[in-house]
Length: 288
Image (cartoon, rainbow, N blue to C red; front, side):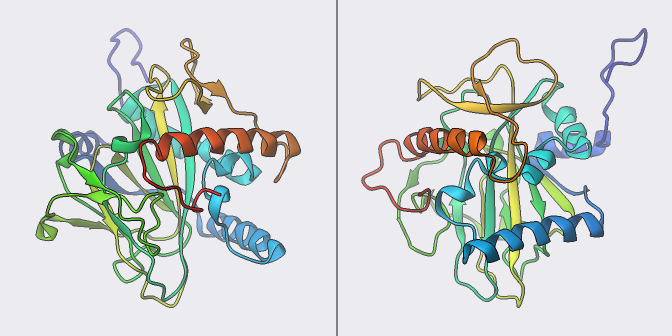
């Protein structure tokens, strides 16, 4: 936001201290977003869908999920989320992807240490993930852990493990020893979000609690960003203007499982699969 007559950008949501921490450490949390009744409503809608289909969200449903669920498309446009994101990357914002991160109660699934930008093909470094909790994200339930400052260093080498318990597409993990003593746990209460730079090294452990750990990551990029490893990619314009047109705009679903948006989802996930598995020796069913 510009102050009249001064041309000085003032934060819309985050404090100057929060922005400085994000710049220096690569993350900031917690940021309150949703009230308890709003969290309950979204979790209820998600689990009603899972009950109807006879199983949890999985495979291709996990990615670009805002094309499948109207309530999630509404969430990526939530003013509280976008105000915080604008403070970090500016007023012209695309949502490139949304991903469900659901760990069942007392499950062994985990996320290994990795850096997202290593695989995403995007050319900008000021890309931010907003991770929204719909259930408690605690050390016990496997909340995210991050390595402060790792976003400011060169990307680390990665290797593919294809471990069945790893929630990442390729079971990718950083191929050097990680000093766990430096890690910070980003615990969140339902309705809170964390923010992290997509160059930041992060991971999460298994859920040893008695409740599901339900999180959704919303991946935001400035409109000037490009996809560097594919001829076609898509994103939703959620704030400001897109004068570049580097991504095909995603349709806004009129309802959950809107046929037009579902058809676009099939195309979008196919393109995303090609990007994420680029150079991999095998392809798993984690994206359908």
